[in-house]
Image 1 (tube, rainbow, N blue to C red):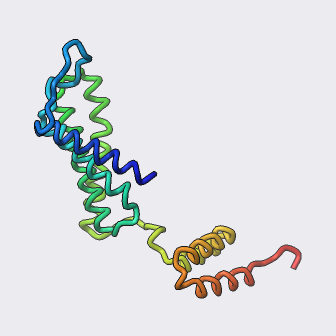
Image 2: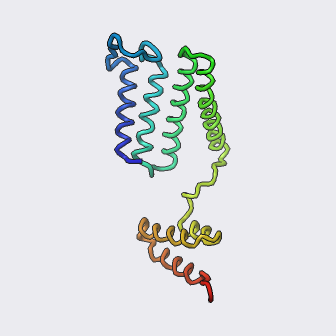
Length: 183
């Protein structure tokens, strides 16, 4: 995702928060289309703006420290679920509309609950990006993907030039062990 998109999320979120807090004046024009509610001064409108603002640093800094990413992601998820729950409860919808809106809210709530439980118990699912490039290349080679193992080591040489000789030795050793057809 392009990093400039974070400015759009931040700006739109800030505008929505300022609009809901009545810092920016909301003057509806007569005869225009109706919205879900007559005024934007609701807590769930503020929560939606905060969701957009929390998404901005996740887009702008994709390699931020893991704890910060988890914290900002949790804030974004919880404010989004709060905003959707507020809309589900406060907006006059028919039964079909409530069910259609309740399904993603329930799925998101279950997902957030599962992530919080995993964090609380310390059982975080396997993250392949957390592996060292040598481990990742070894796993790929073991599972019959030598070309991908080579790519991992070549990318690691570009990303971590101070370890390039170590990666080059591993790459050479992997290529020597590779069985060639007819040999």
